[in-house]
Length: 630
Figure 1 (cartoon, rainbow, N blue to C red):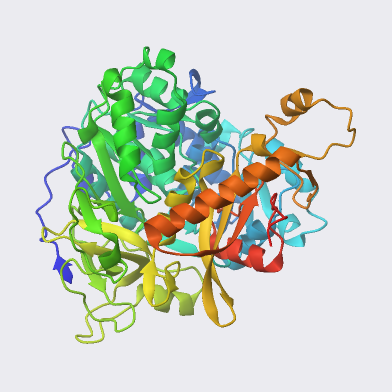
Figure 2 (spheres, helix red, strand yellow):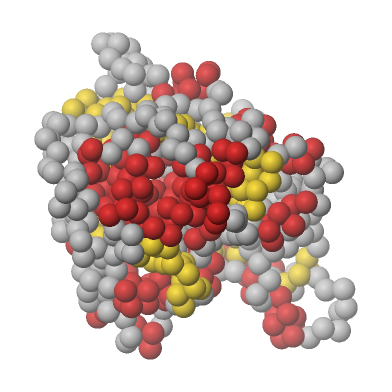
């Protein structure tokens, strides 16, 4: 099915009473204008531990810092080069990011490596991008210096620390020539099935995507954004940094760890600052509904929250319902939920539910969906699957649902691969011509219409052109000729027993005697097993207290001491998984690996790497606690 969205003449969107936003062709000119015309307006505020205002940036202050950082790079002759940005959560990243833009340097936001962490991903980015410099803080540089001997590519970089910059360099800055199609930054994808790829995002991509976000979510002069999302990830960077600048509205930020340690901090910040717009993945809403206590809810007022984006991972109807019910007494309006769909290759957003519109719910027959057909189910049908609509695009994006094998358009409400084209589609992958052609230059086989971006995601368009996402092309499990979506199986697994951690399971297949067999891996809550201790005299209670808050483990540690009672629990969990998967999906599970908490392979943005899980299973490198299962 091919759907072309009618181009709507853009409403005049003013940054003030004097200058329309569509007159800006790049982010540098936009920030410079705000620094001159709105110098004292608070742009970004960082909340230490999610509650204390540690620092803030006005537009004037950010412009000054950006010019200082940029001048240092320009004086070093680095204009046009690529720069790694390795920063902890905070405002220093924002200054460095715009410093790169001001210098005509291409920033590469990356997750700052922790101590003893494998640096292979970082090294592959340095190699692919041919980066010449890295911007960071003094503390992170000190931690990385010890790796210079092992990884010569790091030692060869120009290292700039920006938390000790010199303000007198700002006068030496000169504005680089930046066009709307100039490369703004490289967004390296998670690399769930291979080496990370650098998506080339232009200034025009960012401004057009921001316009799309703005039109659907109705930001105005009273809007306030609250975010805890990491800025090295596309949603955290674009909605937490670029969008506030685009619209000229304040943004209050906290570290992801602040939210994860205490989810109520996110909602407390929305309450305190009367946040109107905030975004998070599906798991975050579930975490809030599960962990925020009735006593904590008494102090929350979420009545100001008008746009709650649920994106970056599959949207689960039960989570929307659970969160809405849990926080209705706090003033949360369910119409604030705006499920959305996007990807880095399309800058960020492809579609989203609009503000003040309820998310669309489809109850469909699971068996028909396995055959790529959309057939509505009866309300009491036990085999039904509930799908949540991901809304619409607001600009010129063209969405095509395509049969991934024949490359021809699908019929209405028929599942196929999601292809898109439009001005938000990025320029391709940095120095990867073949992969760029495969992904960004697809054409329909019957009409030769194109080029389109192949998203690799499966979905369908409703009769009124709303997008529904059902899974990933490469992840689809095909057993006995029927399609099964791994995320649906994983949800079933996670809901069948309290021991299984939510969003920490993977379903995939392996070949056994020429047939595809289903394998499940799932992390268990820590209390269902315990690590072997060096001194056996340590009492269990002391042991739990000692290990309870430890998040990082030695990667090659495999030793466990399993209590006899745990073996019974393992059998119970395995039986529950097999029964649930058989009941809901009609599948027999070949093998179940129960994993230690924190060990299932994930991307830097927290998504489960099913391909890596499968490889770890085949290589016997997963940290399994139920190794008694054959």
